[in-house]
Image (tube, rainbow over all chains, first blue to last red; front, side):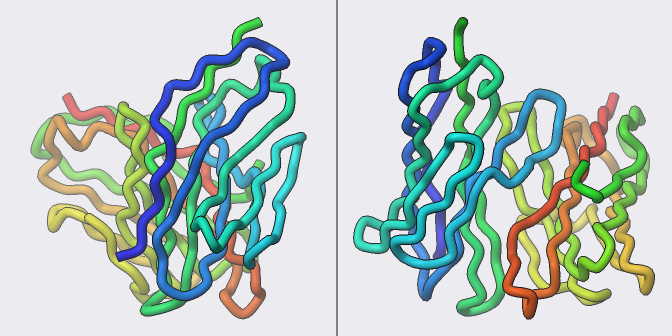
Length: 113
Length: 115
């Protein structure tokens, strides 16, 4: 079945460090891919998305590229801030074999000043 | 503000009891999803409704049930509550599939504590 696997956390970085959170997926058909972010005490909110191979989603300095050949959608940011501390979820949605949305387990990021 | 509202914000109850969580989707959205988030942060999909009909089912316990009403708001009913049901329950909504927009918009959640 379809699945999403993301790197385990927590990830701890110093301010201005480079961030990568790995995400790989298994899916039939051509899913849409998403990164959601959950700040402390809040619900999830969409960070970025990509709907087809080689698309790059970007928002707030974060970016991720839909790589069909490696079935990956890694999240990157060139210089993190303390305010980026949150839990990041990779997800896919697909209408192949029935509509479904699948979330990864989440990766907690701590950014130190 | 995502436009999705959930009530109540907090709920404290005892084992064996029954509670109802309510969700109002964003204006125009037809899909409603329910998720359970445990303390270790995992997000578990429970169930999805589309325009009043059940569309997808996740690992929802038989003690849990949901429905979506004609005005598109949804309720999640949890019965015979156990300590392990303590969690954050999120509702999300999304636009009609024909819109081509399939991202979900999450509400602020209901924190359920079972004592």
